Each structure stands twice: as C-alpha cells, then as structure tokens.
Image (cartoon, rainbow over all chains, first blue to last red; front, side):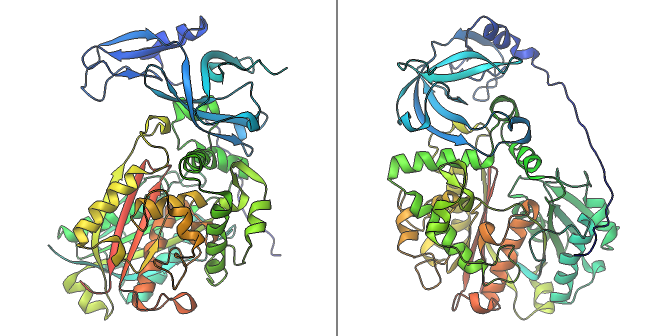
Length: 147
Length: 386
C-alpha cells in the first residue's frame, strides 16, 4: 500500500452554553423537582422548558412542577456510543408521555432491556449521573430498583 | 412556469479517500459533470456547495472549492440541511435558474468523514440532534433515533427485524452491481440478523456507512438545456418540509411528517401520483428509514412498508424499484454529497444509462432526501418528458 502523505491538525473546542432564561429549571433539579414552563396566554406546557412560546409568541411564562408520571412510547439500547459517552454504553434511551402532556426523551434506568414493555408506567425523576451531570431520567413506576 | 433541466452529472466512487483533500474530491465530481455536458466553468452563473463539514479541514469550504475548480468570480453559497444538504443545494440551484437569475447553475455536494476516527464521527453526527436536551445529557446517536422510530413502528404495525434485514439485502444486491458503491458485496438476511447491535433493534447491517465522496449536478434553463444536450432530464416537482428538532415532541414517531408533506407538494407540482413513479432514490440511512419512506411517499399504505419489501416489490421488476444503486446503505452516505448523488443516479436511470441496474423504460424518477431524523425533507421529481 502507498504510504500516506498527510498533515496532522488538531482542533480543540470548549464552550459555555447560556441557560439564564431557564435557570429556575436547573435550580429545581438540584432540589429534586421537575419544573416546566406554561405559557400564560395559551396554556401550552413545555418540558424541557422554553422561555418563549412558539405558538403565540409570548414570553410570559409560569413555572409549574411536574408529578413525573409517564407512559412509555418507544426506546432503544445504545451500544455504539459517541466518543464522550463511550464509558457509559450500553444505555437505554426512551421517549414517554408525561401525565401533563409533553413527551420527553431521557435515559431509562433500573430496568433490564428484556423487561421493557410498550406503554409501561414510568416515573421521571431528577438524577445525578456519574458525579458531575445533573439531569432527569425515567425509572419504572412499580419495579424494585435493581441491585 | 419556466422549465429547468439536469444537463450534466458527476459522481465519484464512494468509500475511503484518504488520498485527497475536500477540494480535490469536489473537483473530481465537478470535472466529470462538466465533461458530461461539454460546458466550462465560465458558463456557470451560480454555484451551491452542500457540505455538513464538521469532519474535515475546511470549516468554510465553498470559497476554496470554487477557487480550486476555477469558478470565481461568479456567485455562490454553501447550504447545510444535515443529511439532506445535497438536495437543499439542488433546490437552491433550481431557484437560481427558475428565477432567471442565471441560465446555468452548479450544485456540488462533498463530504470527507474518514479524517476522524469512528467514535468521533458518531459524536459529530450525534450533535446534529437536539444538542441541549438530547445529545449533551443523553448521548443520543443517529442509529439511536432511528432505532426509537423502528421500535415504535414494530410495536404499532408488527414490522420485524427480518423485514429490516431484507432492505439491507436488496440494497447490497444493487450495490454489488454499482462500481461507484463503497460496499460491492451481497449479504443474506442471516448475515444482517447476526451482525452486532449498534442501537437495538438496529444492527450493523441496518446502518448506512461512514463515507467520503462527492457528486455534482448542472442545472440549465430550457433554452440552454436544449442547446447542450439531447437528453435533458426535467425537474417536474419539488417539495420541502421540516419537523421538530426534539424528536419526542412529534405526534407520531413512526412516520416522518416532513416526508409526507414534502412529497405531497412535489406530487402536486408535477401533477402525478405515487403510482406514476418508475424509480425512486429514498433516504435509507437506516433500513427502517427506507420502510417508512415507502409509506410516507405513498408507495404503500401506512404500516405496510415491511410487507412491501417482503414481497420484493421494491426490486427491479417490482411495483416500484427503490435504491437500485445500492442506496446510502451500500453505496455509502457522504453526508453533503448524498442528495446530489441521488439526483445523479436518477438522471442516469431516466437517460437509460444505468447499465445492469437499469429500470426498463423509466420515465419518472423521485428523490427523497431526509435531514437528521426528519428535521428536513426534500422531495424532487424528475422526468424524461416535461
């Protein structure tokens, strides 16, 4: 095979992503609360929260707490992960519908893939993953946590 | 309405191209397109470059491709619509000609994905999903998105893993007949079912490839087209639509609403129905995506896509031959190039130049090109006659 003639080039990018407009959501998570925004004009609920309503273009939002009750719609088990998640695979990603209406994507924890059934009842809870990352995840509503 | 035709095409071999830069690779496709129709760079009034771009050296590739291919000082832009960037370029080039701003426009798509390792490629592709609420917190991947679409489709309609595998078998069969394809070998249903899991229920053979490649298409006004070629391929209809970036926010995850809407627009503009299409290039980034495309494009009823491939209706000789060039699955999927390459393949089919893979007497062809997981869809209908 012909020897490769090439130039090595490295690009390292680090960024800060502003969350000022929905800082209440992140504060709520720290207390174990799931906070959604609700448009005062059209009553549409947003979770993950948004500061502006695309339906009526109002930015006048209420913050409401979700009860976390959800019903599973679909899921996958990620085996080949992005580089930044390589040490966490395999992991389950699910989409479920919250009792309050919005549909949410999150990891599904504390269940074996073979025990997952469509429409099963889930609970969306605030959770801290691998020390630094605070976010939410689904767990089965009735199952005992796996040891 | 002014007519616009494809008059020239170029299509590099897809695969690993560690021997060239992005400019050199784009040049290969542009040169072939010029040679195909006997025009020169100075005849081009406007150029559109399609490139996703995060895998390769040029962060702003259009100026360097233009300079390298002698296309200065005419106007140009780079477009990005994730995996549908190529079709976006063709739609913009169409507008440039249709509006009368120029009588000859060039759309060139190019991507070099092998310059980074595979986990980095998965990372850079995954970042096309909702960065804030999907990728950063949960490490979503494109196989993962389509796996969730597949799970929903299986639960709703009984679509099986075997039916998904049958799409891969078909596309590999035609890829094996296409000298431009990245993987030129046939596979069996068993090979596909036994392959390793990427994002359950999708396995290796359900997924398209990481690829390098470029393609170019030259569009001309009616007067110009008739002077250049005896076989202009006319653009009969175009449609485009979008859907939410956050996948969960969609009403029905088992369909791509953007594809349904884009195809309806394109059929209406062309004045045809799905049954009038003789050959189609659909966006089979994953096998489930092809099955859903059959349904979204109206080639079968909702939920019957699995049955359509099981009955081999999308092979040559079937009701509607689909991806008879190997598709993204076997021919390869260099992101920015794919939509342009699909147009190049349909042009060959409608000119009757597809050789062993020719769909007999193909008069109307359709290209369905999806960006991300349906965030964008462009449908373009081509005809031998206007």
